[in-house]
Image (cartoon, rainbow, N blue to C red; front, side, top):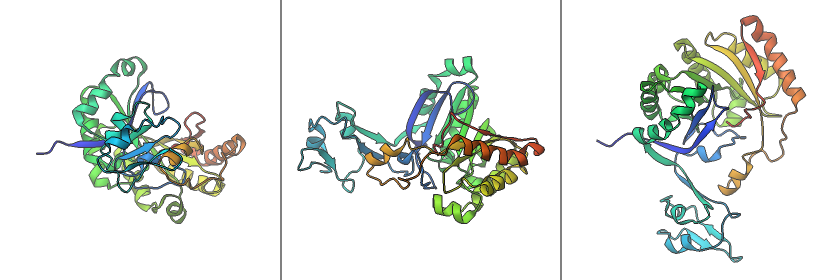
Length: 314
């Protein structure tokens, strides 16, 4: 029987923005949404991907000589390039590259392999009240692996948080909820038509999943990445706050400001950035939206915050 594996595209150590205390953040590869502003485009596709950063490339030619599929070539200006159609993401060029100009996003781990990486940081978890945060991509797209690794962490008393956009089959990921301590849940837009326009999918399943997770009793923080011109209206934020006010497990609502820090990732993935003309929202507008949300949430015993430190990555 083949051993269960999960596909991961990054592991970040000593994070302090993805939950309580010092945390290790594990990024699951693959996402059911295609948000126009996504700051982690390398996490959208489930397939492994190879990138080339020309700034770090010194033109040694190791990858050109050793690529088994002929995917690497040198252009007329002597700059190393590669043909994505021929690339099978075998990773050989990444292993050979002396300057780390090439990177592979998407590596398969067994539960034990990933747990060993997490357990290395137990000292920081114990002394800061931290733990592990599973992010993405979308964690719920790999429910069997999420269940297995979250259960393993619980056995060793490691706090588990997840970041999710709620895109997934509830029946498939419901067993995971028993081993998750905290959930960050994104609501991108309350209007389903606009949600489909900005993410590629309607939101009915997502909102229904949030209702079911809340009924299960997990502690939840709902977040909205505020993107000017797309979801930053008073109407949308108030509608989101109204929905949150009905959910008993949600006590906190955070607004995250859109940023442009992921643009370089699109370049090395050879993807055109969808929002080249959108500027970051100003602080005054963000605080205004917080006030609008709190007019609804505070009477319900909940509260909205402008999370300045944790920008809109998802």
